Length: 448
Ligand code: TRP
Image (cartoon, rainbow, N blue to C red; front, side, top):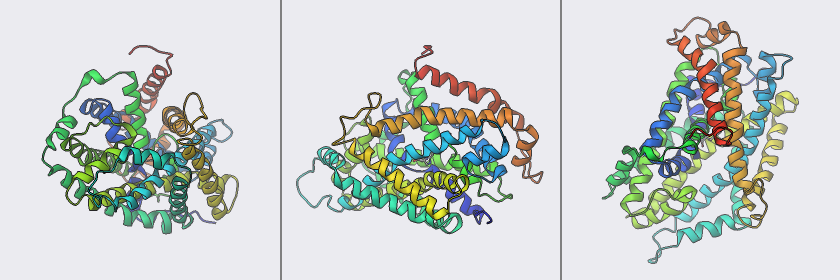
């Protein structure tokens, strides 16, 4: 059977950007930046984008397109008989963990689309904090929305690469862009918005420490879907005429732009209406509903905002599910349809536990964390940096330099600048930087 693939360049871009742009940009980035010193964090983040994320994304593309296989199979093909395939096993595990809690938050976005319709109907202000907690801590409702969200994800993945992932990304991503620009303009035209812009532009370097640095790295990897083989899996469906460097640069620019626009859409509104930006994960679910409530026509903007969140989450969730589906169908030789259902159902069950861990199962702790937080931290702070390190080491040291060169140049039809710089970053800078940040975080090194 021939492997499915992406039909057009535009389709490739929309799918890859769709994977990258998600809750990481719209939900996590504004509060992580808000908590960690605003502009100072953003500068650090941009540094990681250029020095680490560009090389890592190119590496994943090289591995995926060269091998034309799932994350585990790709390492088996390129380095047969070696333990390198373990990198792929980490990737499949990471996809499983991430999608489990990601699906829960995806479900929340759907609930908030519906509840936004009621904004402004009452003359009394709602207590959005209490509402958020009573919703997320309840047992049944979040699970219903989790199942709907996972159902949509499964529906798209079942339809395949060209007719599912590509087709829906091409419709949803332009729509997403349009909606977020509308929101940013609305936010910027509120009086008092300039405090938010100042916060985004005014660096507070004293806020930077070891934890902030790992947060910036983790956020960069998460936001670009890197370090666990999502991009390996997607690029295994690229045709040979796709320019890998171009896709990398466009994706990283688009993803950063989305994160900044999200910051611009959210933070000025937060400041304008007298709230603080360091509210944590509740920022978009607690503070924003209050902001919308105080805004003329708030209900309409609230509905648009939560549709934006849901769409962004959906196009990311499909890329996570695809990692597991490609693995199950190619390595365990299952039918694609069977593989999709097995993956979707097991991940949803894990998601149910994540959701319950915020309420009735809050007493269950894994290393001091609720199940939800453990899944998030274990993947973002451990599996992804570790996986990312193995991926750059593989391309930097294990693959033949000529093969890497050939893949980046599409067999000699393109030109590439700075190949030597790239190889230097891959061989030395990226692995050492990731290792240092990581060791510092787990407390083995104490230089900050
Ligand atoms: N990048 C997506 C976001 O910003 C989430 C995502 C999709 C992801 N695939 C991933 C995160 C793989 C980590 C790894 O929301």
